[in-house]
Amino acid sequence: MTTINNIADLVRILREQPEWADAVRSILLSQELLELPDRFAKFVQRVDQKFEAIDQRFDDLTQDMNARFEEVNAQFEGVNARFEEVNAQFEGVNARFEEVNAQFEGVNAQFEGVNARLNRLEGQVGNLNGYIYEQRVKNAALVRARNVLRLQDPRIVLTRDTGRTVELDRLVNRALSSGAISLEEEEELQETDVIITGADNRHVAIEISITADNSDIQRARLRADILAKVTGGEVTPVIITANLNEPQRVFAENQGVTVFTMRN
Image (cartoon, rainbow, N blue to C red; front, side, top):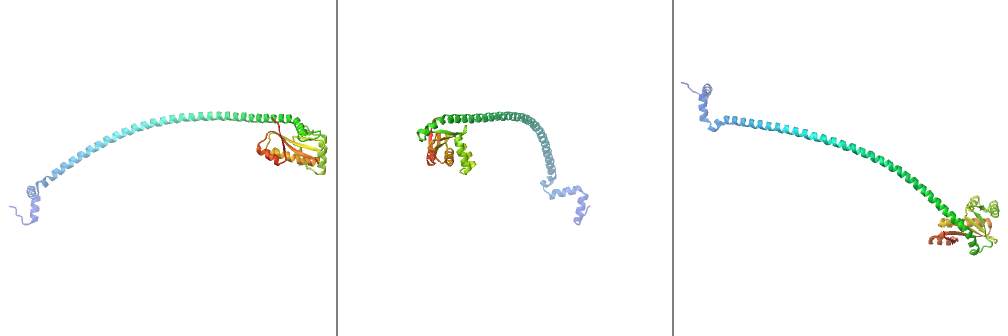
């Protein structure tokens, strides 16, 4: 018979006799604790099965995502190719626009050339119109000098076309020699449109302008003063014009410049 004297004897016997250990375990542990290892093993088995299912699902998802990514990548490659095609078309359109722009610049340059020629032609027509006006009013100026300004036996002694008469040239040279006028004043006097002189040493310095402005009025005043130094006589500055605004009329009156209006 086996004798148990202490705990060490019990432990030894339980190790030597597994059936005793099972018997003691059944007494000391509840049924739930006894079943726990089997239940834990089954739990681990079910968990492993779940993880295997999850792994399989993850593999399936990974394969599906890879397939989708490959499909999307292929679509992007198609879109990129389309963008390259569109970009090439835009480059062609841009080149065409540059070509058209160059053509427009050429046309614009031609229009500018035409416009410049038209401006020159307009200026020439204006100059011609002014020249015709000047020629037409010269004879009328003699009549106005006699009938309005009361010059005796008036005659033209200077025009810009014909220059000075011998009579006026002699007076100018004498004024230059005596220092009565300067060379600059002689040149200024020579630019007068018309100078008319009378037998009574009265004179008229005339500026002719279709539309007179303040500068025309000032020139008439300046050149009349120079002519007075040359002749020593009375000189009337005159503006002959087709158009004179009210401010210019007042300015002429203040400058002592007589205005003759003659239609163009």
